Length: 168
Image (cartoon, rainbow, N blue to C red; front, side, top):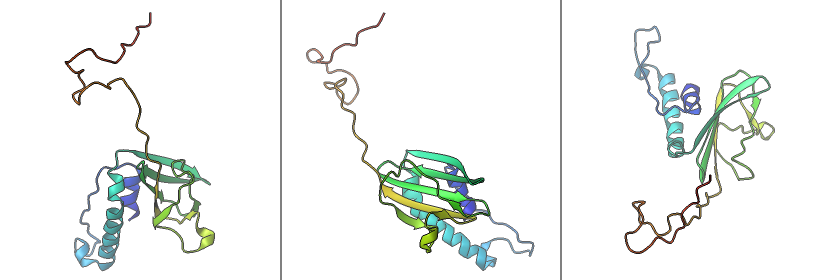
């Protein structure tokens, strides 16, 4: 699972599963129950985050906390997602992400049941959470107030917008 989410955190735009040989002559997950179960769990978790990953606003990041490198991605402006991957052997404190601010966070997966470890990401694990961000404000401008949807000024009458002054 960690490899799939490490790819997502590095802003991969797709994932591909492949068959492999575990040196027993049987290729693929249908012969290996533990691998099949792990793959099914990973796919289930990826499906949970797909709607957020499709948002055009995405910010992948890398950060180092206590000499451990973490990888993550923040997606969205209104309905937001944070994925953090810890590929190291150390439990590490979750990084501060400015997009969250004071928003109420909902844990999707990877959180600890122990309240004392609530702010840690376990070794070799993935943590995902969502929150609702502030709705982006629409820019108020009069530049195209009397234009149609094509971006061209209307043919009737004179335009009410003022021409920009050219600086010399």
